[in-house]
Length: 367
Image 1 (tube, rainbow, N blue to C red):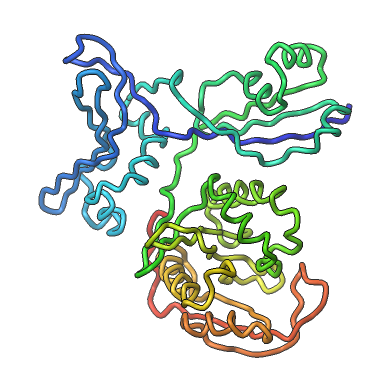
Image 2: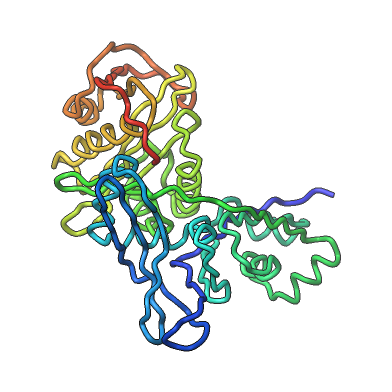
């Protein structure tokens, strides 16, 4: 039997709630993430906790993140975020399943709110005409019935889905397993924040692509609302895999002053030349202010700190003077100019080839 393949990824939308005995309440009570950290430095050793609080009597519980760690083991940028009580970082740790297991903290699975991220989903007409196989990625090991999720995905009732399962016209592969989430990337420059993509960034990227200004990057953007969510979901997945020599790593660029999303920066792998290169784009409304060169500089510094690479590569069409200027302002050196057609181009174009060397040995850290 031939099945239509549907795939989604199940992710929590907020920190896990902890159920534990509370001295103030005299029994078990829900403890919620306060968004704050406690940091204790004793000589060269550092302890870091994420503070949870009883929702009834406000007693607190400290979830251990680092215990008796050398100060050199904790990236300086992350340590500063602990001191600043960075709420985004607190949310990231509040959804890291391995952290709760390490602390033997009981998660309240009934209170979990979640989102289904579409990875692959055919048209409605195709769904009605064929048997369906649904793969639901569950890296956080959320305890939610597969048939309930399938009903949400298909827009049917749970009873309908159960009948289809019994007939064999719907099969569900509930992919369990634990995932220790890498910390979401966040870089700050003078005017910008460069961070991990999130599902709620979709509309901003659709608006930037719809005016045709990103055609060089994405190709035909006339129907970008149909595929932008999938691109963001794929980008999030690739960030978790964290292998710049496999495909691409894309991040969001937003303006500090008003948190407007203005573009993206990251790296890509040139399969034809077996090299890792810089990639970037900027919405048309935000060009002419030097934002892109600033973002590229910030990302390049981050890249060389986190990956064992001695150089970053770049190409830009000669006619695209603004892109060439961006690379040059960011420190890239021109190597040569020649006709070039990569694996996805239809015709060869006169292109500049650039390189930026890493002048110091890479400092390996957890991304």
